Amino acid sequence: MSESKRICLLPGDGIGPEITAEAVKVLEVIGAREGVRFEFDEALLGGIAIDETGSPFPEETLAKAHAADAVLLAAIGGPKWDTTDPTKPRPEQGLLGIRKALGLYANLRPVKILDALNDASSLKAEYLEGVDMLIVRELTGGLYFGASGREDGVEGAASGGGEGMRAYDTMEYREYEIERIVRVAFDAARTRGKKVHSVDKANVLESSRLWREVAHRVAADYPDVEVVDQLVDNTAMQLVRWPAQFDVMVTENMFGDILSDEASMLTGSLGMLASASLGDGTALYEPSHGSAPDIAGQGIANPLAMLLSVEMMLRYSFEMHEAADRLAAAIEAVLADGWRTRDIADASTLPQKMVGTKAMGDLVAEKL
Image 1 (cartoon, rainbow, N blue to C red):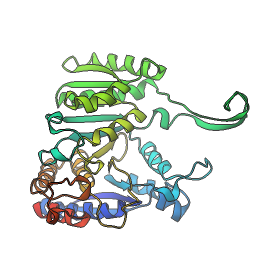
Image 2 (image 1 turned 180 degrees about the vertical axis):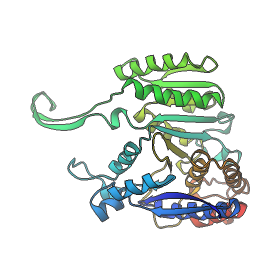
Image 3 (image 1 turned 90 degrees about the vertical axis):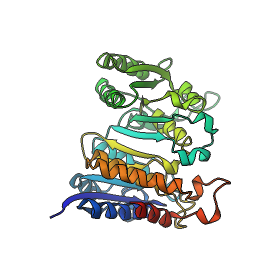
């Protein structure tokens, strides 16, 4: 009897269902080869959940996530649900909610340059040599989870000092939240290049000064790992100046959100950046791109970030390392053969080598 693995699928919005279909296709090929039966339990999250239930994160979705061995999320959101009205639900509340509910405090985003995509990056090829970094982002604290709100009729809030509306968001961290994410980064660095860049804004923010103090205390337990303190604005510049200097980067929630999107362009597209969210509960895997509503339904979305997220799921949740290696090799082989989706194509791409979502998934499945 074959081994069984249950995956909670969250296709979400926009291109989400399209790239989810390719992930299922590839997993079924892997399962047949490995003698593993993947069971898929689909649930609602984000905009579609608002439309069907009124909530971006229904209770049924949490129950299915808890019951699964892993959660695979595609993408959420879109202009249909954009609002500045604090009383109306937003898709992003679903994403933040499931991360918090599952205790997923560590987001891992690998950024590696594949030889076949050197020309896809917005940087010149000579700046990309040796780029292979892991961004470790704290996921359940900081500005996104601190106290926030609005107040009407606050004296001095309006331009010129008159009464007006006041809005606030609070960035706060507790010592244990910093320590556990920094340890994730140092543990990862021990298996890689033994170097950690701890990114903060300690010259301005009190929360960053605590971050730096805790990071240094943790570093004392890892004498074999070099630690570098770096301000977030300098880091943003260094990512495009000399990205190969980074091995493991660890930072708070909002900084990590922004820097990982910037780093994705080293690979040529957000469509190539996968992520794993780990912590106390069922792990969640998702591509780092958004729902791309402008191309939804056209069959042209790049599914590779989703497939690379599947690779991370095979490694971290299922310990199927050989299968993960084969999937990574299959993706690289397809790209080496010249196949491209629109987002990673360049002037040298032959018209007959330009493929859509389904065809790219088929090519990877065939290589497997």
